[in-house]
Each structure stands twice: as structure tokens, then as C-alpha cells.
Length: 185
Image 1 (spheres, rainbow, N blue to C red):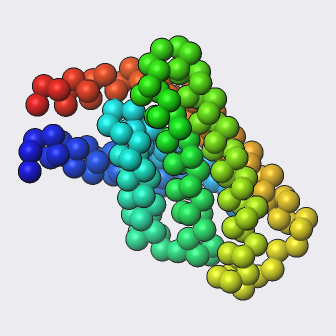
Image 2: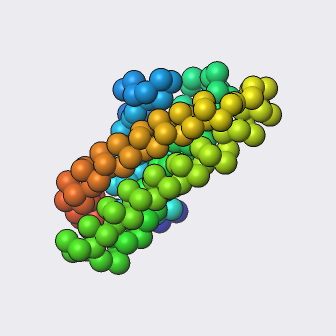
């Protein structure tokens, strides 16, 4: 295994572990929803390495959380949505930023990431919640409850996207350090 692959493996483990620890520190939001900042390592990894690196960090973080905490009352639904919205922000941001590394590129990446996290979260909650709760939790959700849940989750995703956007620029500055480490080894 060459040194670049070893470095990516080591950084992948490091970023996933940091993301997992950050995932454990949740901030109560609305109702049962909790805000976390665990997508930051995935965002940094996708900027430094590739968007696929960020996806892997998101996946490993959620699998670790499931192993440690179990499925919970929602049978893993929160992990599915966390993975989905995390990737929804990280992928477009990284793809755009890697092509346009200037102020306009940053603005476009941030807007697309924010738009994507809200839209994917909204669609995921609207399309997945009813069958998921029906088949896995054996619970029917009335339309008023579903609307409330979707609005709450959309607000959560918008706030999460705004936080990711706010920390993205400092992360880009930090990414230069990681790129130098990778280049020198």
C-alpha cells in the first residue's frame, strides 16, 4: 500500500472518529429533533480529498452511532436522514469548490449546499416518513403531525446548513494545512 493510500486511510479514520464524537454532542432543537455539528469533518475531508471521502466519513459516523447507541425508538430513521442531509450538503459544496476556488465559487458552493440540504431533507422527510413509520414502527402518522414534523425538520436542516456554511470558509483555510501534509509525505 503506497503512502498516499495509507494517509487517506489514516485521515479517514481520524475524520470519522471526530465526526462520531461530535455526533454524540447533540443540541435539543424542536420536539425530538437534535442539532449536531458532526458534518464538519466530512465537509473538511471532501474539500481536502474528494467528495467520496466526505460520503465515507458520513457513513462511518452513522454506522458507529448505530453500533454504540442502537437503533433507538425511531429504528435508525434519524441516521438515515443524518446521512442523507450530510451528503446533500457536502457533495455539491465540494464539487463546486474544487472547480471554482475563489469568492464566487465559495458563494455558489455554499448556496448550492444550503439549498440541497433543505430540499433533500424536505423530500426525504415527506417521502420516507410515512412508509418508514408504517412498516418499521407500525404507526400511522396523520397529515397534521406529518406537516409539523416536516416543517420542524426543514428548519433544523436550514440551521444545520447555515452552520456548515459559516464554518466552511475557515475549513477551507485549514484544508491548506492538510494538503501540505499530504504533499510533503
